[in-house]
Length: 260
Ligand code: ZN
Ligand code: FE
Image 1 (cartoon, helix red, strand yellow):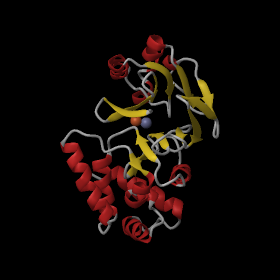
Image 2 (cartoon, helix red, strand yellow):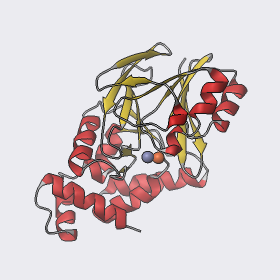
Image 3 (tube, rainbow, N blue to C red):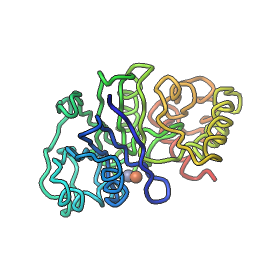
Image 4 (cartoon, rainbow, N blue to C red):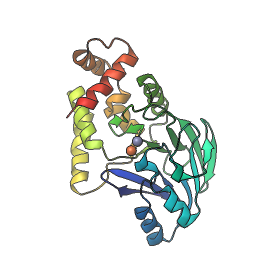
């Protein structure tokens, strides 16, 4: 039986850990301590570390975890990683890796960073599993630090084409603030309203709002809905200069950057 756990770290990161009762892998361990504690508590051997991008809150724990466990590290070939990460197995778009008896496909999804990647275990029991780092958040997407709006839109389009039941494992608990923005963009979207109530209740009990599903994200995420008539109208009111789909997506991202 494969089990999935979001290990909370820092303010709002999740270090996603997958295990089969003996072997484990962890995605984007920005901090080693909570991962080592989890491994010890559940008597697990860390087999692999998967990295989506170079930011410190996703890579800061790699050196210590690797020293403690000898785990192999997989990362996008197109990312420039901090030196502390050391040698990695570099992955390009379409590469496949077998871990915990599952096959993971690597997707290149630039936008947040220049070489950002995502990992899909399409045959995972319980439905496909997607580890998407800071590219796709529930009801949101990552900021454009290194990539362009065109790249991010193309990356999100690829992820959005995955099956409905795909479990979306994002690296941050940003859902509530993202849903408030989604509400401002689409005040008439009842799914956003409903999901906000659901997620508020979860957060009040200290529970994660993740994983989400792609079916859910297609209903509530303005960044997957930038071609919906209601979203096009909202963007046009906010920025009348945005006249094509890339300019509209860029305007939506800018709107979110300034939204409080
Ligand atoms: Zn990041
Ligand atoms: Fe991050």
